[in-house]
Image (cartoon, rainbow, N blue to C red):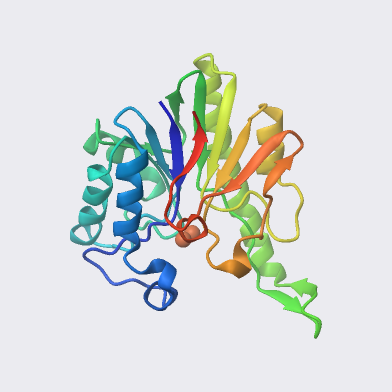
Length: 248
Ligand SMILES: [Fe+2]
Ligand SMILES: [Fe+2]
C-alpha cells in the first residue's frame, strides 16, 4: 500500500481551458494521457491517490462531470482536495459530493482520510499573491494593502477548516498526520504561517501542496525539511505528471 499525490490536473474534457499556458507550454500537451499512463504503471488498487486541487475547469454539471469520471476511472482510492478553480465544489457542498461519489471518490474538507496509522488532513488553504510592487532590481518594496487584508481573512477561514480536519482525526485517536493544501503553506514573503505553525503543533510529518505553475513559481514556498516537517510541491507540471510517492 502506497500513498501518491499530484495536483492541478485542470481537466477540460467538456469545457474550455482558461489559462493560455495550457495550450502553449509543451509540458501540458496530452497531460491527462501522460498522467493516466503513469498512474496505471505506479498506482495499485489499494494505493491512495491524493489529487491536490484544481481538478476541472468546468462550471456547469455537464462540463465538470466528465472530468470527475476520468478521475474515477484512474487506479487506486482517490482523495480530492479543493482548489481555487474548482467551481463545481462550493465549500458547503462537500458532504453532498461525498454522498454522490461514495465508494468512488473522497472529498477532503473538514474531515480526514485514514491511511495506515496516519490521518490525511487538509484544506484548500490560501496565500497572499499580491499585487506586489517591485523596484528596478525586481526587489519587493510594497504590496496592495487592501488585497492583503482580504487575503488574511481567507487565510483565517481556511485555517479553521484545517483545524477542523485535524480535530476530527485527533478525536478518532490519530496522532500521525500528513497535511495537504492546495495553496502553498506560506506566501513568498513568509517563512512561516498559521498553516506551518498548526502542522508543527500537531506534529505533522509532511506538508504537501500544489497550485504553483511554471518554473518561476516552483520556489514560491517551502521545499524540503523545515523544523522537522518535509514540505513538498506536487503541482502536475512541476512533477511532469508523474504522481509523487508520499508514503509507502
Ligand atoms: Fe492550478
Ligand atoms: Fe490553484
